[in-house]
Image 1 (spheres, rainbow, N blue to C red):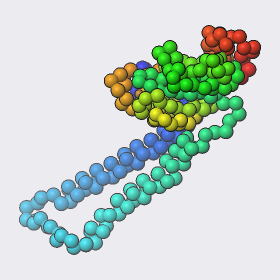
Image 2: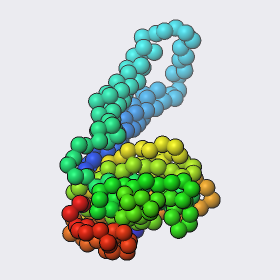
Image 3: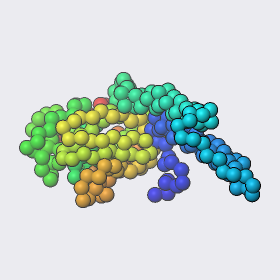
Image 4: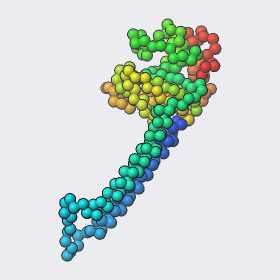
Length: 264
Ligand SMILES: [Cu+2]
């Protein structure tokens, strides 16, 4: 894993830069505070060092002296900075990522379904529809219970622990879980979202770099949690289309359907 060094993993989604800027800002502020407090501490150590002939002074409790009030100033400055960081930076960035799903024309649509211990990725077929799934059809050979007898499902593509995305194209994801709480985490995209049983949680990503990145489960979910991983391959549109076609060729209903190339 050469891409994990001392710093953050490579930033490979449209909003990764905003997350990283926030992290940088917090680290810079903490470094500044550390240096200032350290300098102040050393100043006090020197100024009030023990010297022969100088008695220690202790202030009376509850005196509310000027010195005590002054000592609140750094706390107020830091608290103001932190509140400003949350209100003017963190909340707007968070809402951009979590609340404002971009209204793009012709997005890629995918369902991601977590289970102990893997991820299923469900793509629509040439009809562009994510077909219905039924709980009683869930089986080792059909982990998401796709109803292949339904025309909308018959041509769908389902991948296990392997996600393919075209670069610079927005993908809208519905995240679900079949059993317990999992967390869908792709560090390079700076996305981490819990998958909660019974909920369909929308997410979106616009990958900005081609390459292979790790999908990992970030929520301890059982004995094989550490093995719950997959790969996301970000490819050029041409590579993605070729892969999609090759998957369709393995699905009888999709291969039989006329012209699979146009919908993605
Ligand atoms: Cu998990």
